[in-house]
Image 1 (cartoon, rainbow, N blue to C red):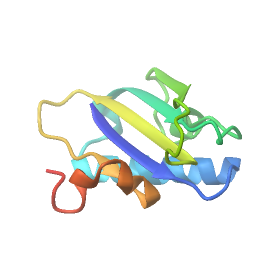
Image 2 (cartoon, rainbow, N blue to C red; image 1 turned 180 degrees about the vertical axis):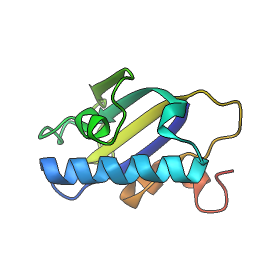
Image 3 (tube, helix red, strand yellow; image 1 turned 45 degrees about the vertical axis):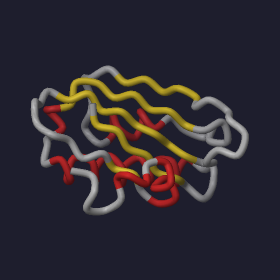
Image 4 (cartoon, rainbow, N blue to C red; image 1 turned 90 degrees about the horizontal axis):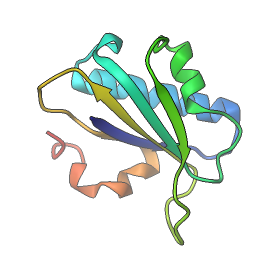
Length: 117
């Protein structure tokens, strides 16, 4: 499974969709995989994001026939807000590069550029 996360500034359908697209494209690019290599996607979003399902944008991007689910992230005091997390289940036996963008980099400081091999 490849993991990643991204934040948005505002709770709007456009920002949620734009961020979802940016994150998925970056994950595919960094891992040099095709959409066809992905067999399922799970999304979570913090409770302050309720204007759109990230999976809807993923379908528009061509992930049409795979199972996807959207969940609400646990609400924890002082946790990162306006955050979309994703897990892509892939059909590969190679190393993966997890992708954390924008303010979501604080979730995995061990994966900062150059350390996510």
